[in-house]
Length: 493
Ligand SMILES: [Zn+2]
Image (cartoon, rainbow, N blue to C red; front, side, top):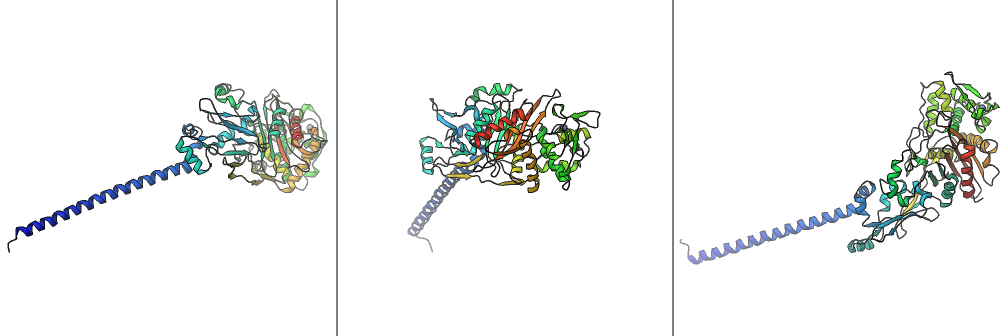
């Protein structure tokens, strides 16, 4: 049958409408795809924004050399650093040209420990950079300041540092080079950390090149934690402990007659300090009077492998973990070392190097029944509204020695204060123990003065303290008076 034209027209109309329907469907699908793509991109961007804000920013902020730090400080006002007694150690003020100015109200007193954020950074300003530049302000406040182009308030870092103790240590060291560290033995809280020569962090940007150019002073070196010194006689603590471990049954019967000198086995002689002749000594009097020949003879009797392992147990040759950087102390004797090297090492000369912080930690473990607490300088981080973001709790680092060994060492160190080279610390309202040292660092006989010890008084937390005075000669003349001045303030005497 022949198709009628009407039917054809009808068919064409249907075809056309179907075509139109198809086209509309395609168009709708295109719109849907575009919409989904936009939604997807939006979610991606929003996600990235949150990811950057929460996670990635820490990585960027934490790198002090990162240029993004400056761009981030455009959005966040760097938070304050506060002492344990509530004093402002670092804060940010608005300058006249709209730029933020970092202010350090105590100037040089906290220079190394609080540090600075420019030029690679130092101290708390460097180590806790990301926390100071991170804001936990109310989210709505942050969004509003984000939109309005204002700044969010960075978090506040509360330290364990005590202004009065820090100031006492700072003043007592005076113009001399050296370092002081004070720590609570039961918690590991660092109460004071002084290093000299010092600098004014308020003008660090202007002065920086001068400090870097002056290689002899090492002004920017934090001697308290990064200064590696020969320990001198404070190392007799380590030798005494190793000797007690080697002769657990009869170290109390130890006796030695000091004639003032001892042959080191290489044709040379070791002498007692100031050419003194100490006569008959036991372990306690050898320690309290710091007899070199007695300790050298003790060292020569030790198994070198065990001596080394005892030093390593006290964290020599180890990286000590803390919320700040501590340089690694070194003990180099090994089974092939010659007698002269052993004799020198036993009295803290030779190649042994130690930081004042490390000596303070050893003294703290002795006072704390053998247990070292993890040292820390940050107590907590709070938002600008006072909400706690992070709280540090005291934690046990490691047992450095048995309870009995700690007690035996305390007897030696108490005797040093009662009758020996630390007598200046006796007769006060507190009781103290410790060891002095005079560490020769040149063949000409120039020496640094050391003191490492602890003190306690009813109603106060026990503390450990380490002091080094460069070129201070004897520890009893230079370092002990610094410790005395700090203890006087800490114990309110
Ligand atoms: Zn002697």
